[in-house]
Amino acid sequence: MVAALFLAGPLAWVLTAGVHDPTGGHGGTVLLFAESMPVAFVRGAGASLIAVVVGLLSARLVSLRWGLWNAGVVMAWASAGVGTVDQVLRARGSASGLLGAFAVEGGLLAVLAAGFAFLAGRVARERWGEEEGWSRGKRVGMIVAAVVASAVGVAVGTRVGMIDNLKGQAIFSVLAGSVLGGILATIVWPRHPAWTVVLGVAVVAVFGPMYAMATVPAGQLVEQIFGGTLVGFARITPMDWAAGALLGTPMGMSIAGGLMGREQVVAGRA
Image 1 (tube, rainbow, N blue to C red):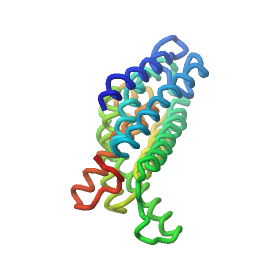
Image 2 (image 1 turned 45 degrees about the horizontal axis):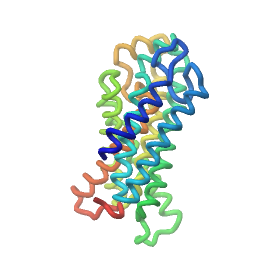
Image 3 (image 1 turned 90 degrees about the horizontal axis):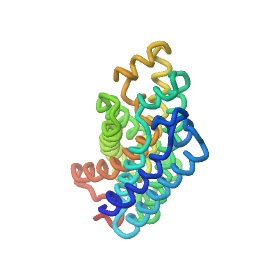
Image 4 (image 1 turned 120 degrees about the vertical axis):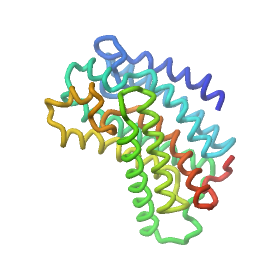
């Protein structure tokens, strides 16, 4: 935890802080909008790789819960190096295509975070669902149910928690939504894998901007983004989704396990 917070995290921040928008400011993103997309991609990939290494080591040596949390700490540092939604909007000079780009990049990064959670679960020898003796169809159905439950929690958390456009609030709202999503997923399936919660975050990362595109007139987007009145889950920048998901998922699963009085599914839990 200390290494992630004070060593790996700042190193990830140094990498993403070098991602600039076409005006030379900090309103860029690591995949779809930057002064130099190859440079932004390499810097973003480098920061993500640091999070993956820290997370996998923590999952193997301590527990899956700490693996996800420490990777999330590194990703939160990395996200702090890139712009908020209003900074990105100022750099672009127009809201045209902004939400679509957020849906693509945010969804992709959250899906990659879910892939990391799956890999970390294998490294930590996470056990989920084996003891039920379910058929493949039954297990797929429960996975879908857990993802949907998680998405509902994430949507509620980010809708309520994202009040203004501050970076910390964006990450915290995803964290809070992931906690709620983890609790709901545990109610649906007490021994669900951690990655189903993160995948629920990916669903909202895509749905949020697309919902705003469908319901808000194009001429009002700029005013609503700067005024903080656009629906919360549409104002979260892409890397915030991955950071908040990895921080909130282990908290939600642990809280739910405690409330329900059931054994945590994470092998080797600290």
